[in-house]
Length: 234
Image 1 (cartoon, rainbow, N blue to C red):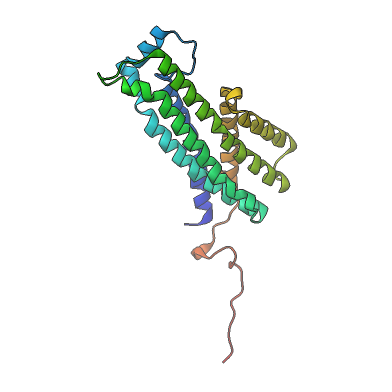
Image 2 (cartoon, rainbow, N blue to C red):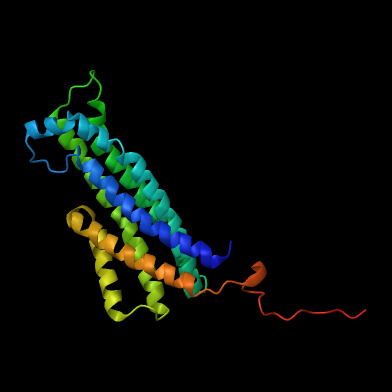
């Protein structure tokens, strides 16, 4: 597979990951408890609603698929940044940072949904206070995972700025996203929305980079394409 096609697929994987991550959060919200001031009756009603439980059951696999696609996108983004920077070692943190976000996100959502899944069993009697504690623990973990997103944005912004491919306004906007992501829990949902918008821009950037790479006939590597053949005299 040529590099242009690989980058295109990575870019579309990033777009699909955003859709799946949003869908997973929306499904989990049906039974999750992210507001400790919610009344006991409301909490128990959410947990014992069979329709909500069934819908929330799709959240973990959808979330896992979204994280997998985000990691795919991260590998493509790293390749683009490698080309721009000439192999800056800083690009090596892109994929681990995405993995950090995905791991904490999955753990946080699992904690939030655990009580609802247990409520399917007749052996479990939900306790509203326990549900509140697990819900808040899950929310803190998931929002802390945004630190990984902040690292991705910071590294990408630094390299693209040094390569003079990022306008000044976009640089400052990206660093604002970094600050929101690093603030974790205190930024609440604002950081998540900000990173989602940034991810859309990053996807567009990767797709544009893919279009700028001309396919090489015959699968010849870019480093050797155009090199005149050599002959030996006997």
